[in-house]
Image (tube, rainbow over all chains, first blue to last red; front, side, top):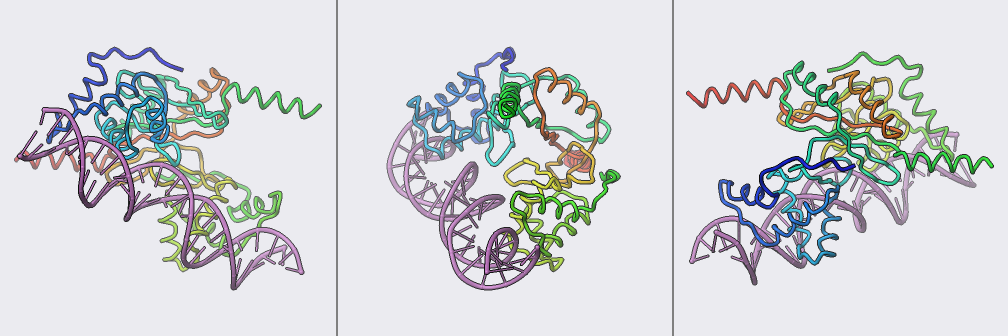
Length: 162
Length: 162
DNA sequence: ATTCTTGCAAAGCCTTTGCAACTGC
DNA sequence: GCAGTTGCAAAGGCTTTGCAAGAAT
């Protein structure tokens, strides 16, 4: 599920360049980094470091594994990507020009379904207020079976009974 | 924050023994495993594999690292422990005889604060209904600064201004 | 006796890092 | 030219696994 992109004044590339320039020790905006940012923001999806390495290879965007890891880290610090701790490997998703949302993860087909719920945002504000907790970020993932996989399972069960 | 324990008919040890016996190929209930379960359920806290290895050593409960990992995996499958994917290492918490709850994690002092919120349970039911998603479990973690660390930070800022 | 469990050490997986060559500013 | 970046390979941190010895049923 893709939400309409949030209106942003700068392109991801510009935003990243600005971040790099704003650092105490100015960091460099290389062609490789630009290509990576352009590629990452050309499609909205969830990916991990390994998948990105593969995709870049397929797109003929040269980048070693080390560079991918290093650039991902910078993109997170720059606020362009968000990190999801959902298993043994880190997943990434757009954090810039994309609204806050929560996740449902299908354990069967590995689809990540996004959803928004004002009640959850409010619950976060409430509980943080009660505990005087200053929230920086949150992770909300519901794991289970998506509609398709669930239907397939029920159908299979029926067949098994025949 | 500890909640009152949920009323359960079996002790964790009994529940684990029953799980082991119920497996297709009956698994064995060793003294080592029993000692681990008793120790783990003697206190309510969040821990990772390494911390548990240390604790067991201090309690003179012999268990190699490999055994700890293997037993943790069994305890999760048995429904005694819940796994939290919150970073590079897995964390574990009681899943048996303890109510469902969400987490606030202080990034400064690493305290895990638990809270319950009916609004969140309801939000989960709602969104799963809307998407015909069959939820198996969920992870909800709010990251930030707890009240104490937040206060310390504000105090420090004041002192810096003097 | 059979089959599962243990401990050790080795391997696995994902991520990070040291270093020399390279490149943006 | 200086300071940051890249690629490679090696190391790191956490977890899993092969195997021989030990223990539960």
